[in-house]
Each structure stands twice: as structure tokens, then as C-alpha cells.
Image 1 (spheres, rainbow, N blue to C red):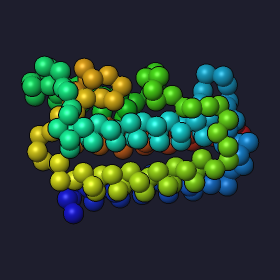
Image 2 (cartoon, rainbow, N blue to C red):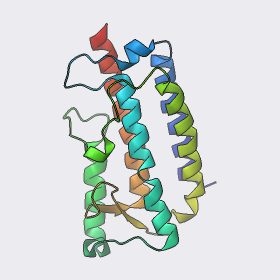
Image 3 (cartoon, rainbow, N blue to C red):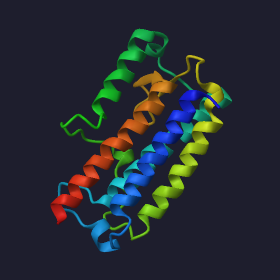
Image 4 (cartoon, rainbow, N blue to C red):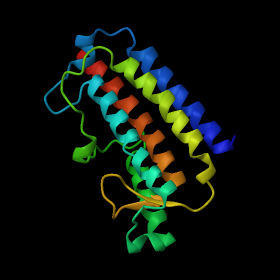
Length: 182
């Protein structure tokens, strides 16, 4: 197994365990409760993470099928690295400034039921399988477009780093939501 994939798998398992340990004993009502109208509930955060990760599945399918249609800017490594690093920095758990998500990644509903942690855990295992199934693409300088905007392009490895960092950031956000509810 590729060392990067191994490290990512460990991080995903750790994030999953953190969510389970921190929120596993909460009722469906508490998981869906919002501290205010402008803040997502813990269940909505989980749904958002699932939606964003799954939005990359068709992107990699296009890469494999050779049907990915990249913009001209993707030919310049300076821009792809710049975009990737900017996005990675913006989703860092250490960054305090909030950013608005693209509409395709917003939670599906405000009341998502009490089984969102189970859905998230199942998704995380699927996400690990997705990484493993695509590890043969690593190290091949593959550039992808963001599922939200095809003009935003970055290296595949950076995309995986972004997704994992994004999960860590939202774990911190979920902890803040819980502290505000108590």
C-alpha cells in the first residue's frame, strides 16, 4: 500500500473515532439541534462531509475513463499548486475564519434523523476504499477539477489532503456546536 494512502486511512479512522467518541451518546434531537439559525447542527455537519467526499467519486471516474474535461489553466503547475494550497489552507482546522460552502455541498435537510453517525461511519469506510481503489493514480501528476467549479483545478494528492483536513476542521466545528448547546 502507498504510504500516503496508509497515512490517510489512519487519519480517517482517527477522525471517525473522534466523532463517535464525542457525539456517539447524543440523542437524535441533540444531533439535529442548532445553537442558532446560522450554525449547522452536528448532523448537518456530518451530512456535509459525506456530500463533499462523495462529490469526488464522479471526478475520479472521469479521470479513469479519460473523459475529464479540464480547463486550459490546468496545464500550468503554478496555478494548480496555487489553487490546491489556497484551498488546503482555507479548510485547515487551525483557521478561524468561516467560509461559505458551495450549494452542492450544503446539508440536504435540517432534520436528518438520529442515525447520521452510523451513516458517517459507513461513509468513512467507503471513503477509505475509494482512496485505496485510486492509489494507483497517485504520483502521476494528475490534475482534477473541483466538483463545485471546474475552473478550480489542483493535484489529486492535494484533493485528498483537502478532504481530510476539511473533516478535521468540521470535527472542531462540531465540538463548538456541542459546547454551545450545553
